[in-house]
Image 1 (cartoon, rainbow, N blue to C red):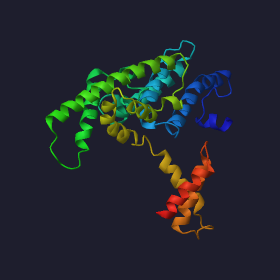
Image 2 (image 1 turned 60 degrees about the vertical axis):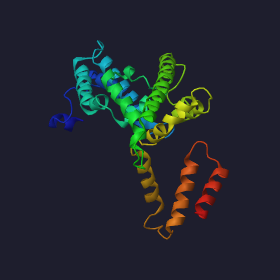
Image 3 (image 1 turned 45 degrees about the vertical axis):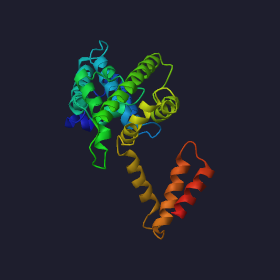
Image 4 (image 1 turned 90 degrees about the horizontal axis):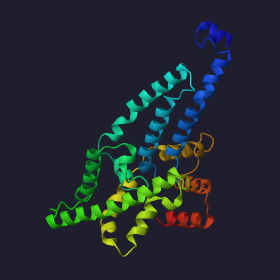
Length: 278
């Protein structure tokens, strides 16, 4: 530290209490960023639909830190610079229709996009995009009947009303800390399956479900594919390179199964048997 201080690479007060106090003041922010990074790379819930919410939460966290009267000027300045960089990186996400906002709109936890500061014109464009998806997925090239188009909009309105109610209840419970973001009971795909199985409103949910499944299946990041690449590099090494492609694939499937929290030998055997049949 002495050499770094003399060379100007370390703060001049690095041996004083003020330096360590600054580190303690920014530690919660670093921890929050680390938590955010871990959540956005998790595989226990649909990542793409939760990304806008977590980024908005980070915006709010930084806003509060920038006006904390207990922080020194240097710590406040650090937080303001971080907030500026964060807005520079992510503001556009909330300014126009995109797949992440579409995923959030179809998620019963985050369907009320106004909670994340999204203005009404962007919300309207998000739902217009969701309404358009069935037409975009019409691979046959046939013209869409105007009556079917009107019926599709009716279905979307029914779904939207139900999703907004679920979202408001979830946000209220989340603020009261009676639920967690990644509770399995609130997983969006399970919610959609449950709604589609109910007699009342079933037609509307089934009509929009193909769009929801398509959007939810879109990965929010490349974390899982990168993990797969890492598993291959650890399995196929210069000293262990005699496995053929099929054996390597089976080994990777086995490793992925055993790494999950709910590892089931029976499910693994079924999966391997299906691979061998194909």
